[in-house]
Image (tube, rainbow, N blue to C red; front, top):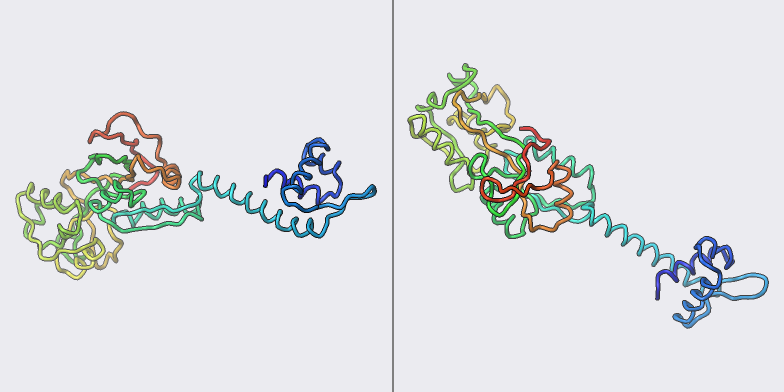
Length: 316
């Protein structure tokens, strides 16, 4: 059964006049009459009773009209859905993010995506950078908000787009002696107790903090390890120690925690969107477009991979 014959039948049934129906369909009357006859031949029933005065639907035609309209409506809906899916407006997007992305970048990007594609199912996972990488490479994730292992470094076999380059900040209990300073040197922290991410938690920042402290001439005295930045800040607020965090840091009552920038020329850290170039997902393509990712350059990045230009719409 051909859909064009169904459409022709519905128009004839609405007009009950072959001439007017042919005009609507922009067909010659003999062509339209042959289509209706062929449809009746396929079904093995008469859909219209014909006499010299007017055209009428038979009982079979009346029942078939209801079903034909439903079939055509569903076919049109399927075509629209397919086009929307191809445009990335339907389907699923699997996105992972590091915790430091939740304070600015993630709400900004997801808000923009949700406004443009409200019917896309979002599957969101808080994951460290080290846990995102195999998932992106293995197809378990579509896109990640992560921090490359080293500042300004690319990620082998992935495409990246830097959305912010974030500085480090010192987190101090509000009444701490160093909270009186506008900026703090790393060396000023040499005698302090530290609260830091646990190295096994998958944070790529743990080693950089240790290296920075050692470069300032001391080994940090870590008295408490945590799994996330929010817990770290809560422990700083409780007076257990000080910490080093990337900005933007978790929001906290300034009466409990004081954030101070570093005086030292410590390198900041990129926050990047990362994805596999082999991922064919249309929702991924749409997300990248809304994130301001321009077509990837063919020039190899610093890790020997194509890297999309930096400088997206989200600022750190």
